[in-house]
Image 1: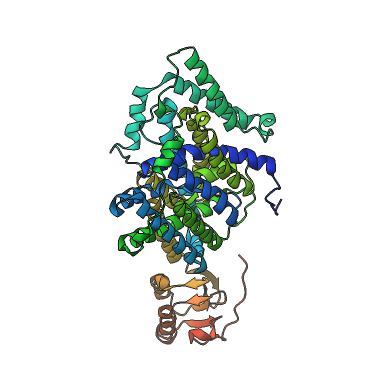
Image 2: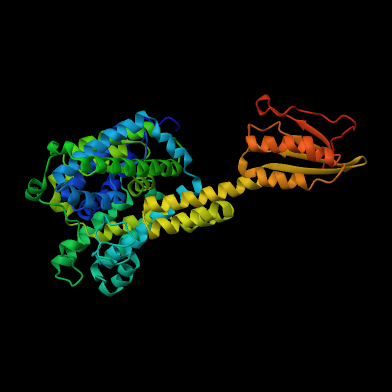
Length: 528
């Protein structure tokens, strides 16, 4: 199944698009709410992200939409610029900048994200989803669905809200959440159910939760969920009309608009590249996405979203992993989720407004668990400290601060480990005792940088007098100038003083150090 035509998995993709739609709907609304923007702007962004970016991108699985990572930027920008209509101009400009970045081939930047940091980011997002959704499962909905920050708008931390939610348990919401989780786990475990491609577990959960809550309401039970903040809350047609605004292009000359545009372009592009890298990692078919084309697609998406009064967008891990878990295999799933968003939001909002948030919390809890399951931690632990430490620090930093700062910290730690590894593996050292004295072979690594100078220097200083030394650079692609100079000094001074019989071999012409062979002794190859 290497060549995936857009219609090669229609049933699976339509079912998956439906699940992604159910996950994306409260997130689109929640992120708009958290950003201080009109609610419908979140839906516009989700639709454009699904249909336009889904069509233009060559990622088969990534889902684009409004992103939690941009909420803080949007919130301050709308206030600073003096209105949402002016902010929309910045969104359009950000899109143009992203297209420019795509043509400048800035997408290759994603090749520099180490696996341990990407894995850490995915596990952290899983943990954040779990921490954020448990209160919703309990029926404690003070924190809106778009808030992915550890310190919430209220000033409380995620843990405060978690502990608080124990005192505000809503019986009906909790029953629906537990029943939903049971159905979802059963759906995963029973092969016969898993094969029903057109009936994903998430859809069964949502339909049953609506029916169950309607029964609670009709029987006037205390378990009935009636208040708006416990249910999906789509704006009415009149609210959409009132909140709808178009970009105010007279703001093009405003310097602040350009600064906001650059900020959005930079943050959205980095988040997108991180998400694409992560999605490719989760892809069961291990396909690779053209990241430069992705930046151009995101840019077009942001331009259209800005023109239509929508929020800026990025590729989003939560939706993308929900897509993969639900059996989506081609971009049809992403496009279909965008189509559903606009159809349902405009045609039948009253039906969607009956969905309890606790049922959607159960769907998201499963997504979170799959991203952060214990097996991931065990796998990285087994890979050794140089993988595990950057991974675990990324997890803690992303959960405790936010996505971009957390990834930056993880990258920093990862670089320190790379430098440390580099210091250790500048060369291999092989000593063989032969009758004519010690034969010591020093094989230089592929790359020998100035960071390795101290280690090589101390090794050369410790070589015994009258030994036979071979310094082999056959496999070396690059040797730092300082290291070459040091080797010349060793050859001309130290080796002569210590009567070391020195052979230099494999050094390329550009290093200006001639290969010399010491011929007085027959060196035999000894196999260990």
